[in-house]
Image (cartoon, rainbow, N blue to C red; front, side, top):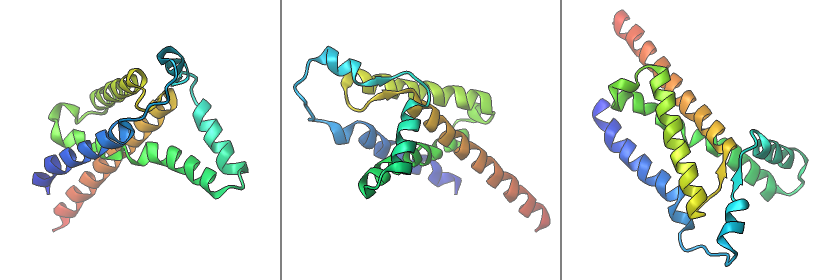
Length: 154
């Protein structure tokens, strides 16, 4: 199984790069770049989460509810495979180096999205993505512990 982790992670990374940047290439709204930058950032924690939570709770429009769910759940679930980094890079076996590395990577993506206007720079994305990566890390850790216990009984 371990021999498939790196190739699968490369495929995952390519898909994520397309989702984060590629699908938006070629988009132009013909507004002033500085105005676009101002509208492309949220540094208030949980502002977007609250917005989408209210949208999901109070909207009668199915598309709006789906958008809210995709944004909130997607920002968590899509980053769970980052937990595999602990298998690819031995230095990331411990949680602190892992989460600091992932935080740096996600921050770099958010900053790049901000300046390229290929997505938005949102502190809530960072928070939700870190939750997803952490969940992936701990699920993989749990899986490894369960595997070790199974091997002891065989």
